[in-house]
Image (tube, rainbow, N blue to C red):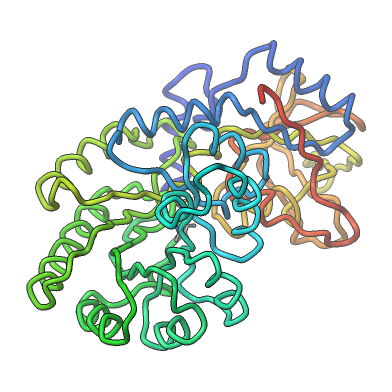
Length: 404
Ligand SMILES: *Cc1c(COP(=O)(O)O)cnc(C)c1O
């Protein structure tokens, strides 16, 4: 909660920002309203120009890192196409995600080449159903694992896969913590890798994830040091070379101006990677949020209105079971903004379902709105529509692409 106060303070310091979210200009506002009139609401507008810009920014700061976009952040196939055309590779975590990417690359001239598939896809869910392993084996994919039970499954059902061991690293201060569910303890890592080699499997690399929306850059530094120690010990004890280091996701998005930019993180990463690893180590990263969060805007409509205990209450046609699901699962708050100007009042905004839990906010600063007025939320590209449900019969928002 301290964070919220901090955000509010920082938001206030900069004029033209609301909760730190830069106000969009008039032309963009008109475009969003036109699209809403044309397509109906709720609409989820994906700006492909911004996706390309994010990809370029990442590559500019981390030129020696191959990008594997984490498809789970937003699995819209058009996003996969846009990123693929920029040269991106992909991190998938389920068989359907694998197929979304495979459909896009299967017809490329190099698609039959083993190194091409590894260059383009990593299956980065350490826990895989047997059916998935059986289906994956045909592609001889690169997959992650973090325990000996999984190793036995891989040996039996996907013996042609290349392996990457995921280790557990500090997730301190990250908005979404992952270390309680995934990652081998660093103290067990070397033995696990040796066990894999002894089973006739090939461990190609090491991976980690510092937690999503990681603003504590020390997590990355500690993870790099742990990885370097493990790789050195494996090479000393087995004489075999670990060729891949996958530094995972976690790259933070500027949901508010207080968040340090990728430039600062990249500088630290580049320095440490150079210090700790040989020049021919292949460095991969799996950014999800960073590439898509600021590329999407939701436009919804006021469908009902009430005054409760003196407070204006608006009911809109999207909520926490739908695009605002990120507020629950991803711990990000998305301010509800109005296209209308005027004096504001603290207002509540609810989703459309028959559940009181479907509350987007109890404290939006909104001018007086009428039925059919449009509202919008920005920075909704990551972990929002991806976790939308059909609860109460309301389908997910309609997706609209711009600047494709
Ligand atoms: C979710 C996930 C990512 C993406 O994380 P971001 O914080 O969105 O960058 C990357 N790798 C793995 C294994 C993940 O589970």
